[in-house]
Image 1 (tube, rainbow, N blue to C red):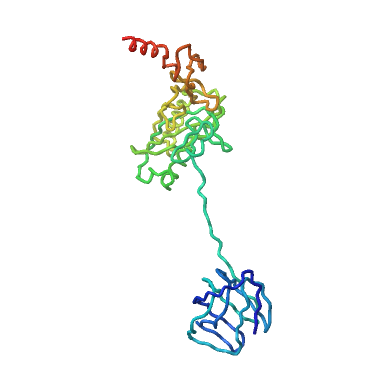
Image 2 (cartoon, helix red, strand yellow):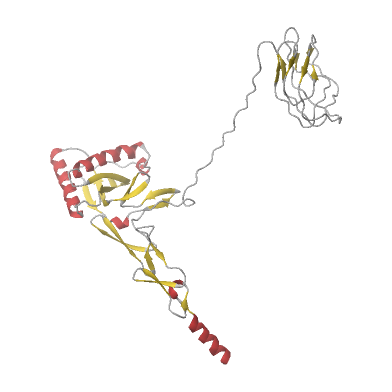
Length: 339
């Protein structure tokens, strides 16, 4: 039986030994672990699987004609050297009347690691923590942005037993305890104007000491004192009613500016908390940034910070904050050379 293929590269007569995978012929003819008779194939050609139904078929491939004898059974036989130009590998060829042979190439799955901070800058009111953009204290994530809030930070000690697993915020022990604490705090503060919610930042030992942040809308009239009073009232009422995790609890307000990440940029500003709102004041030599509300920036060389603006250095001065005095340097050189 002859199978004709269209070749795109003419054969070259340099002989090499090529190993031909097993051939399968329908009917009573079978080829097992055998090498085929000499064939001529083009240089560096890879033959895709061919399917030849019946006796005569024409298949479009990249190889020259290949002749396969019929009514021949070859089993575990090794043929002498064959003349195959170039280093060519011939994939299996199957003569079958039962249907075509399908060749499947498994796709290569490539995973591209997404770029993270600090390679990718974080949005406003967020900082890079362990390659993750995290909203600074005093803000909450909303629609892929960090939104300013009135935030009251606190330490809440509850009468429970601390276990090491609570050091991991992803652990079941942390999640269950935090959920119970948040439910109690939300119940205590829910009637205050413009209350949003509360969250547990971490759990520490000493019975259990929870670091809790409570969030309000920025225009809320609540104060630090009103939040403390609401929490202490809930704790007192809970002791009388034996209501749960707030029984015998202790609530202590903490400083918003001491939280991590800080609500203000520690390198360029000084932080002061006023009733849940951080006030970030630029350090000396810095001016306010139009891109980051809670950080400041330095003036470019040749300018200095003055009344929260960058003003040009006076004549004879240059550098960062006008610290370099050209006139003084020239005077020193003049005195040295004259002496």
